[in-house]
Amino acid sequence: MRRMRLSNIIMFVLIALAAFLVFRTCRAMPSLQNIFSSRPEVIDETPIIIKEIREIGQLITAVSSDEVVVESTLPTRGSGFVNSFNKIIKVLPSADKRIVLIGRGKVVAGTDLKQLKEDDVSVSGDTIRINIPKAVVLDAILNPSDFETFEERGNWSSAEIIEVKKQARLKMVSRALQHNILSTADKKAKEMLRQFLYAAGFKEIIIN
Amino acid sequence: MRYGFFILLLLAFGCSKKESAQQKNAVLSIQQMGELATVEYTVTKIIKASDDKTWFKIGDRKILMTCEAVVKAGVDFSKITEQNFVIDGKNVTLTLPPPKIISLSLPPEKIIIEYESISAFREPFTSAERDALAVQAEKQIRNSIDSLGILLQAKANTATLLSNLLHQLGYEKVTIRHMDNATKPLLQ
Image (cartoon, rainbow over all chains, first blue to last red; front, side, top):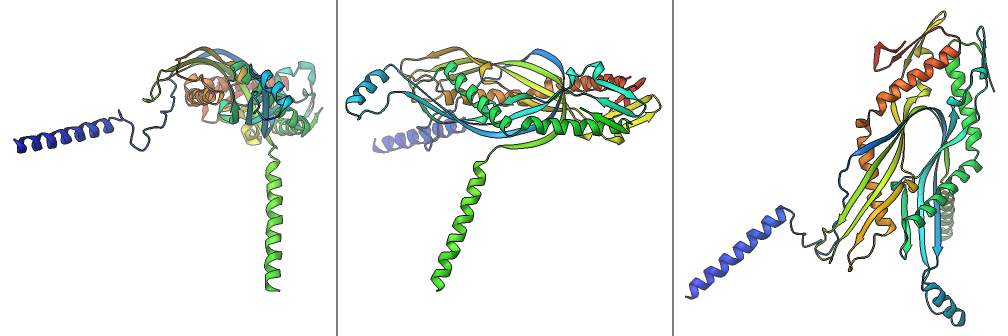
């Protein structure tokens, strides 16, 4: 009777061990190490739909890489009470929601060659005179992977976050403009076109 | 005396480190380049995620977002040199460098939450969590760019743009060839 019970226990332990190993191999069970860690959220593979195809002619001649920090604080429902209480004795922590983002992106500048009109080009023998459009900021790229959330307190709606991210983009553009990205782009565009026109057979090139 | 020398050495190292830290703070850098973007694709994608895989969390969370990305492609204009041109009077043959992807941009205002469902025991998605999902979408778009046919379109558009420019410069017959397919004229 006793031997029967012992063999049953051994059998049970072996089955439990085998089941555990099968589940672990199939990754149906979390490892003991990560048993209380959250599973990462993975998005589904969905198709990419082409919405629009546009013909452009942008000569990109300067790119500024920058890192900006933006922060926003907004009052919540509890802010009024906490603030009026803190006016009497400043003991309660602020009930405002707060977000601090770090954005690492690029500002792209160059010349839109599509703006070049027929009367901007005049040719006489091997001399060419060309008026090119002034350089403009063509893009300010701050993709989702370019943002890092440094601090997030409270619930932030998508619209509120968009406004903060727009602030980051504006800051990046204004910093690039302060560092004369447009004059750098203009200078380089002239240099590029001079090289192209020289290669195309012109000896005297006047670019304005 | 010996200790004094070591202290001075330490101070010198301390000062030089501070200088490099200050340099690190000036992050902005402007680089010159010469790329010609000739095509812009606007693509859309649905970002779909269900947070129901963690066994100890009661209830689930679902989110559905749409995003729009702008992809630009063209050629490296700085690679067009004298060697790319063959000029014969009023006839010119231009060999273009291979097309390339120039940029991918997912503007924040084009990432929109369409639907969100949160169970009673769960917290709503934070901004950082939504960003993490958008980063995955960005990666998927980046990996699928080749299948959109944008490089082929960039090839054709670059040929048209530069052919028109060369006509404007006074050439009567313009032949455009491509570096990776130099024997076949792309545009004549």
